[in-house]
Length: 136
Image 1: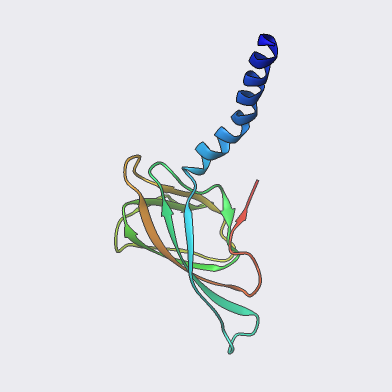
Image 2 (image 1 turned 90 degrees about the horizontal axis):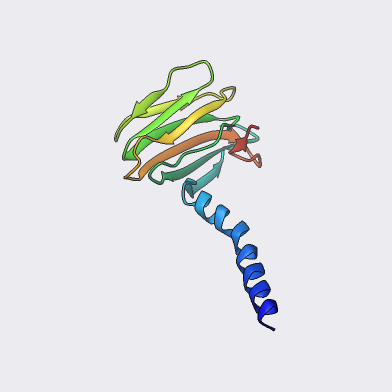
């Protein structure tokens, strides 16, 4: 009976390990909050989406695209932004960044390992199309 309990305990522990990695990884993922979405009647098929993004300390985005005009305004902290073929830009509160619909967003991260960073994003995008598309 003792061997069975040890095995069951070890199996139970092993079953929790796959859950531990995603929980740890999720701690560095951005927190996105949709604030507003509005279809543009005078631009059929287009909409404006307004979101806030919080990068936790050391967090950031994978390489992605938006297929949208993106206007970024830093509210708190310091972020690093960049698109393929361009320079990296380190931005603080009150500073802005722009992405065009053809840009590949190659750099998006918190510059700090100890403090969160928060920014506001306005996207002019195709209606009913996702605003974030990871690129593998």
